[in-house]
Length: 485
Image (cartoon, rainbow, N blue to C red; front, top):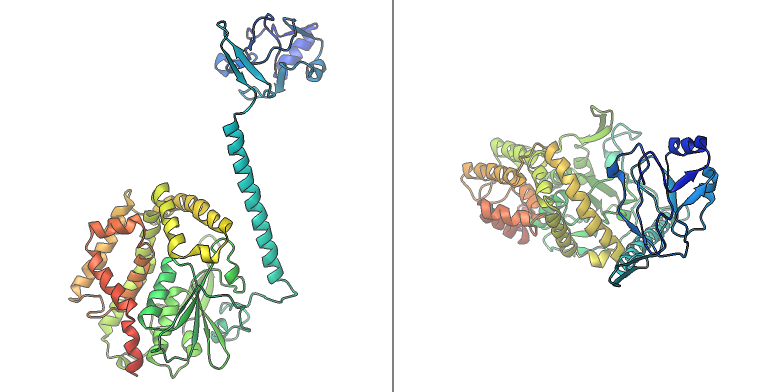
């Protein structure tokens, strides 16, 4: 086919021919003697030659004509009886062709039949369609179940506490729930006979969330009894009852029948530690020292902050600790939340391979097969790992990490180790871990099974400190706080 002139379309009227060109009609007809089985499809002028498609091989259809005559565009559009005739209307450099049975025969007699897509493509397509349909159906069923659970019939409403800016009268009302939340089967129950608080603790968490690991390290170190509710990161049905949308959430039930919801890992640690040092105030009164305040950020979006969350509510003379020790502890606890923890995700999800390996470890350490369905695990592991790999690139830029994110992790860890060395002890707290030690350890324990942690131990001297804190946490060495009362 020559550009600007068509041998495939012999229009009887020059006006019609101009109309064909002006509307960018693309088509092909049988432009071949009967003995030839190849058809070349080209784009019309004024498009350049690189727009042409490769040869399309079609089966002989027994038509001996060497060209097709059309009197109008309507005839072109209506002419669908010829199997090898293909046309479309478009303004892009492509030819949209109807699938035909294909065959190529060489002059030597060798034949190559293409009767459509290969079996492998069909099989792969069937698998993809099956997974997609199955996932959508399972998700729909799960949503139906949740909508039923939280319907008016069962009256399982959101009962989470609110901010100080809302209709509550005091800071205590922010943490005191109006009714007891729904009951879920615990993933684990941690019991220690040394716990004399008389409180029932339930931790709603992600097993490998750095902030949840911080809260768990505190509870284990001080030997508190608590139940663990593993939250499904996709459906989040375990925390639908709460208006607070993050984890960890620590539900505390008192002997008086009160249900108290503590939120934010740092606030949870400060509240519980202050309460353990002075239980005469009561847990709810201690929690009220950390009011939740809503405000608007620079973009006009609402954000929430918890006042005083790095401060401990007790007199310095109650513990015998120096003011300098308390100040240093507060400084490094803030450093964990505002600096150190932001180096973790870009390292854990640095590459697609590392991201997938990390999620598989999360699946193993969190025992997801015991708590979530197969399709939920599939979505979290494979889709989650891909999403986090992409998100990690944004986090790297947002937090100003170095091009080699590993180096940022090494540098911040060395800053921490230098601070410990300056204190002349095994820990920042001296001969026993303080709250800053527990916070750094908790954050690092979230990546213990990942390649990033192995590289960190190989390139810094953090392993000896980490093992020492881990031993203290597993042995609940902080439980001596109960015997000192």
